[in-house]
Image 1: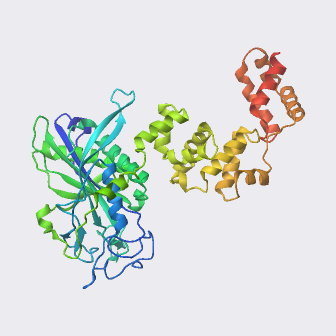
Image 2: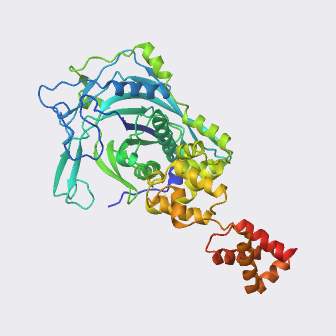
Image 3: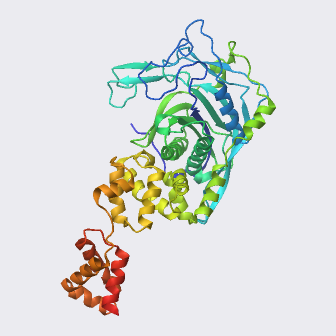
Length: 504
């Protein structure tokens, strides 16, 4: 039975939402957090395991140095303090995919603490953007768990499954968990801010090159905490934690749904259960998971098999020098360099095409041409096929070459789309595809003029409209010329010639 909900806007007239996020980022190290096993995604189940990540007796962990430096770099980028001395702890709880029955994490001594991340959202006025600051409580290092596979059910969840299998390849993958402080003051924009925060954090992690940030593969996973309190009160309400939300759209929808669901319970005089909840993408609802434990229930204690981590101040400063240009600052610079309007830049950001366009321009494409192909034709195909735009067999160098063929007058847009089809199908580079398919604009002015004369003679009624000053009617004649020359005419030249013959 579905939970009762109230209208979102109505809920916000009585309750103030408070949010918090725990974002887990899988690092792109070659080996796991405490052993030498490979971190390859999609490998055969249980093919990258060893006594350490299986938690076998007598196996001793060793900290991955690159993972520690990745955590420090992320902490610096999040404006955090970096601990001079910190250590790992054992977080004790039983899960089928926890081979040791504890997770090696950090508890009261995280490596990064007290930071913030500024996120941009569209201004309420509709003009420009405004900044919302999200306070970061901590970013700490830990290891991932294994993965349970439930077989035989209709949903892939344990309910209704015939049996379950456990794959320990993921056990021990290095993680950084970024935990926010309670986010207050978001009001009716809470879902929007939730999405913007995770998107901004993901962009920052990608810029640091410490993770592939593929949410669909679990490289970035978000747990969204939501609570409500009556407007005008200070005491925080009881929170729920929606686990492992794996897309930006779902984060926004899950927060919105929880606000509506919790408001219905409170309106009815009920109380919120502190629990984990599961997000269902297909139905757009959350369902109850398990009662949420407080920290005391995990029986944290210092990890006796690992020495403390004490990064030298000099090394921290060296790592600070490796930080990239902040993504928001880079976007503004590129928008200015490329001459894009705010709307054009928003389309580029939404398509996830900033890096692709930047590389295309560096390869010789015009900013306008690069945007046209990546956010136009390729984005359309990606939406139709449920892919990301970088999943096609098209590189920034291909786009620069294709743009060059159009600018040089060899191809028109229609022919260029045919060439793009060939590139996607693996037929070669744009020039190779154009050569193989015989695609090239007719450069013989005599052939073009003959085609124009033939079309005018065959369409006297339309030609008469153009002679009478209805220049838009020339479009129909241009189309006929293109057809006559099998799409290989220069439309601009054809239009110019038609107007000269009919209006001069």
